[in-house]
Every structure is written in structure tokens, then in C-alpha cells.
Image (tube, rainbow, N blue to C red; front, side, top):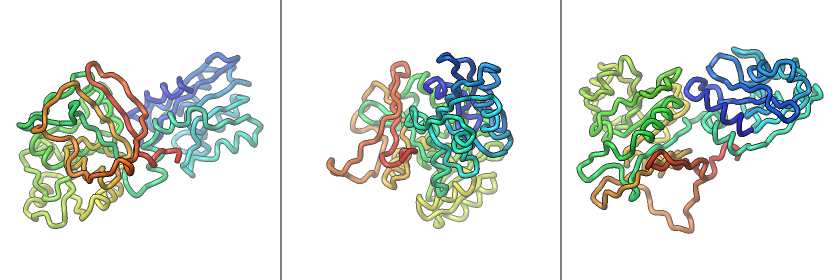
Length: 357
């Protein structure tokens, strides 16, 4: 199952809105075929692994990260391929919550195939957290917050300089990460200060480039920014308050920027979801991060920590977050931690938002 989860990552950035899925066929305890869902609309992991195993799949065990689908979409039902191959046992990590595709486990059992569900379920569910969230809560996108900070929790020095806190391996990871999200967001101050492009510039190019989103209640997103100048070729949205000056909004729309008017963060996220944003990667700044955390809408936190200090006068990573007594503070769940050269990546999931809960 660990190998199947590893294989599933190969579809990152290419299969959404479908889930990441990996599969391994075991015969006599040895792997004889493996597969993964590599491209939206393309072959699913289970048929790919079964094809690789060939005749050795008969009577074998199929290990897969998600319940084999039981519906006809762009590909035939995976259950049919499993039964045709003569597999004797299927071990899956997570049941499919999508009512359209679910039911594979029951069909397999009815055909006499031994079925087990739950092996490494936490790891597989964390891998597909965005997909599982979108199925279970279509009211807003899956929201991930990504911040690169110093050890003392700063995102820029006292002069506002933030390039570069982290080293190249961490920046390469961020480009990879961006490829798997429907949209990348920053606050208005960050947009004006950094003039970011918010595009994916790594070797992995997403099937659909992420939409760029700027949360600027006052609509102050100058038309001179790269985000606005390139809005006709790279979809860009500004989320503004209904009270934002009409002249600013008109200038943005004339430049090709889509403007969503929202009176609250909850309404803004709902509008983005209705516009097709199923997953949102928020990259700062501090006030937007604080607002998202205070509203309890952050599902995952990607924290890149760099080994340096900038001191009290530097820009804090999170601003405006209400004080919480220690006894009432919730402990986030660690789903990954690793070194990125000198930097450290910590991935945390919000308590109570586990895809399995």
C-alpha cells in the first residue's frame, strides 16, 4: 500500500478534479504489476496495474489507494477490469465517498472477491484530502495555507524584503505544490508589494494552470501589476468588498480581471467554489493568513521554515489572529515533515477536518 500511495503522487497536477490513485498487484506476495492514474480522462490505476500483471493477476491480490470505481465515465468501470482479470482479493485504503463512482466494494463482494478496506487509510486520505473535501463539502474550496517563515515566524524583514527566505529546493517544492491546486491566492498588500506572477514555473506543468486570486477588499490592485497585465492570458480574479470604489473595479474588469464582490470571507470562498475553484492555495500575506485561520477555513498548512531570525521589527507570518488560551487551543495533526536542503517542511491538517472523520 505504501508503494501504491507513492505511485499515486505521479498524477499530481494532471488528474484533478479526479483523485490521485495508485495500485499494485501481488502474486505469491510479490509485486507483478503496478499502475497509477496519470492523466484526467486517461486510464485508471487499477486497469493499468492489471494490464502490467497480465495472466499473473488471476487469483492475485490487488492493492489500491481508493475503492475501484463502479461507474462508466471517460473510462470503463474499474470493477469490471478487476473481475475480468480474476483477482481473488482487493485491499483498498479508502472507500470512495463520491456517490456516482462508489459501490465497487459491494459489487466485488457480490462476485465472490475478498475485500478489505482501511489499510494505511490515514495516509491515503491525507493524500486525497482535497478530493475528499470537495465531495463532502461543496460549499467552499479545500483551503491550504502555505507560508515560508523564519524560525521566529517572520515572512519578511523590517523593510518588507522577503526574497529569498528559503533556498532553491524549497522554492522548487512550492512550484510542484502549485501545480496541484485550482487557484493560488494572495492578499492585496502582498500583490502590491511583491508583484508576484503566481504561475507554475517548475518542470511539472499542470493540466489546467491555476487561477490567480487576490483578496483585496478595497479593490486596490493596480493595473500596472503583472497579475493584471497578464489577466487575459492567465485567468485572474480579484475578490473585493461591495463597497470597493467602482472606478477601481471598472479598471480591473477592463483589463480582463474577473471581480467577485463579497461581504465576508465565507461568501468569498463560496463564490470561488461556484466559479469552479475546488482547491485554493493561499500564499500570504500575514493579514490574509490570519483572517483565514481566524475564520477556521484552513484545512491544511504547508509550513516551510528557514533557519534564520529577523527579529521583532520584521513582518509576522500571521496577523490579527485572536488570542486563544492554551487549554482551548487545538493541536493540529502532522501529516508530513521532511528536510528541503537547509529548510524544513511541516504539513499540518486542521483538527476536525480529517478526511476520514
